[in-house]
Amino acid sequence: MSFGWCLDHFSHTVRSYVKLKLSIRVNFYFVLDKTYKHVTYDKVKEALRQGKSANQYLNDKPTSIYVATTFLGKYLKQNCGIKILARDFDRTNQRIKKSHMDYAQLNMLLHDFKYRLEQEIKDRLLKRQMIRLDEIKELMYSVVTGTNKNSRQITFFSAQDEFIGERKKVNKYRTIMKFEGTKKLLKDFVKEYPVSFDGINKDFERKLRAFSIESKKYLNNTISKNFKVLKTFLNWCYEKEYISNLEYTKFDTREDELEVIHLTITELKSLEELHLDNKRLREVLDVFLFQLYTGQRFGDVRNMKY
Image (tube, rainbow, N blue to C red; front, side, top):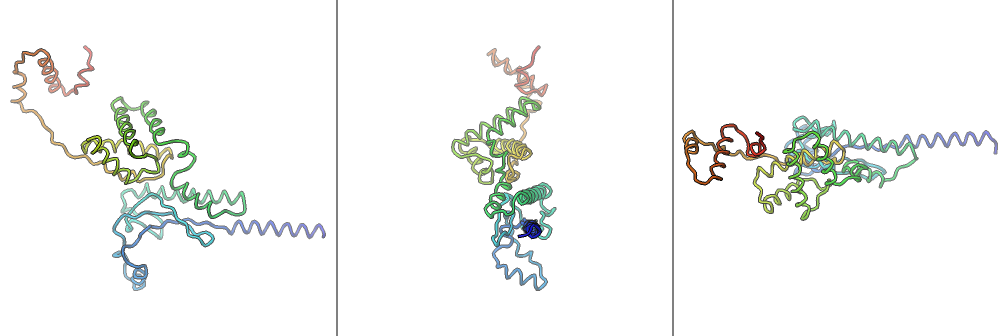
């Protein structure tokens, strides 16, 4: 066996190895869970073949977006945690249309999923020749659900402590008390229902709303304010990459319009002229009248120094 033959054989092996690695492609794309409503796909294809629009068959209810791939003849897909109407998805360009109110934010998220998946596959193939099917499946799950190194190192409530700690440096005391109040609500809630980043979805919203009404006896506006605070916290978590699921952006935070009750001039005059024998009640009335004329809250009046 000559040295020349060994060198040729080695060169051939290297070229084959490089060619094999270059030939491996894992392409990711996005699909809807249920694009069409109760019709067969053959009926949709027939309409398209005849040059007709298939819009009439589109699913009119929100449906999930999945990231998918086909590898070694196996079809894999992972729920992205996003639901939209079928008419808002551009299948050809793989984007959410501008008709969706959050299209820019959601498109950025989808782009991030795809980019991170492709880069991870590329990096792994550079290190070794092959990649296993179960690796791709696990990778899709970890990238999309946010179970990365950040999410594994921090829990829902430890993140909340970190969030409040940061806000204490920039927000006023009254705002911090709102954050603490919502945290206390969730601490009570977790005694009956588990709370984690993975479980932040519409079912979580429904259960927390029911808990607020039935156990806490909160009115709608108080519940809505707590959900607003929660969304502020979860936005912060998203920026920190502690969470990738955007289901929380759909939580309902609408408040009821309240009737503003005010005193008439006649009623105000009656209070001014009211005679009270009880010293404590006279002082309470004086403070109340002072609040009416200055627009101060009771807490502000109580903290006044003179």
